[in-house]
Length: 152
Image (cartoon, rainbow, N blue to C red):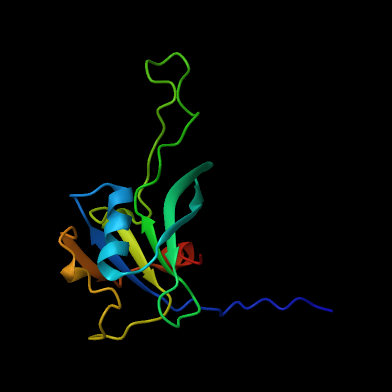
């Protein structure tokens, strides 16, 4: 039996960037859950391998309504990497951090919706109602390489 690979497989999704300079990560997710009566829960970190380093991003998932595929909230900035520092340095364990989307580093979080929203369709989470969201917008200028990062 042969294994068939789907080269033309496309993951349909919509991505929003969210800025919230008022709350830390835990309070942000708690507030999203409370205001919108959803249950985003922390799952295993979202790991990206770049330049011989692994970057770990906080990842939360939630099934909304009758959707089979979950919605995801991903922190746009990785946790500090450990171990590549100079052992003779004053801060030997200081590691680098990286944004998932460098050209959208002004967003603190990314919301992945598991289907494509057409222009004018409403986001199922009305983020404009959240007092702690300072800015959000749909991200539509992803490269093919960036899109592949979100095959969660």
